[in-house]
Length: 64
Image (cartoon, rainbow, N blue to C red):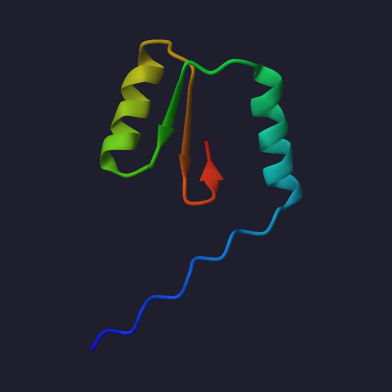
């Protein structure tokens, strides 16, 4: 039998992560929020950014 996988622990809040989140908040409104940075999310993010759309991509306790 397969053992259940352990729960993913949230990443520690580092000064760099706090600063990045501060910059996102300062920027203001975001047109599109993409949840998941797999092949589809990353491709969509790239295409929308090329069109000048303001996007935020988040994936498993991280954002970009």
